[in-house]
Length: 77
Image (cartoon, rainbow, N blue to C red; front, side, top):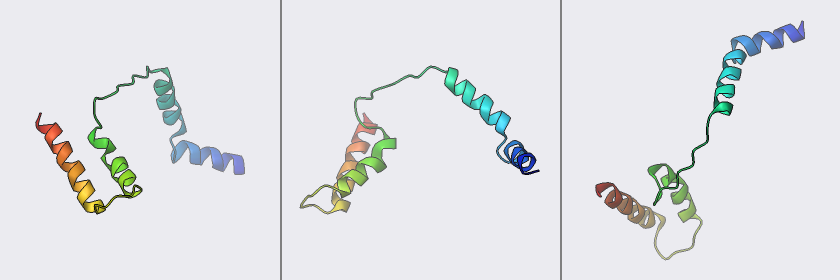
């Protein structure tokens, strides 16, 4: 009975068969790696977190604002 309940949960709640098909499609796909010339907007939170861990005479707010302005200049190009 426990096995049946587990099977039902996997089928109904997690849609196990659909998940398996999606993972199979992902596994059969081609991995393409792009190396952008500068950080993308997706990297901004990671870079901001990195700034928090570095020592500087500037406040974290000033450093993040400076980074934000740099991103905006890149976007205007």
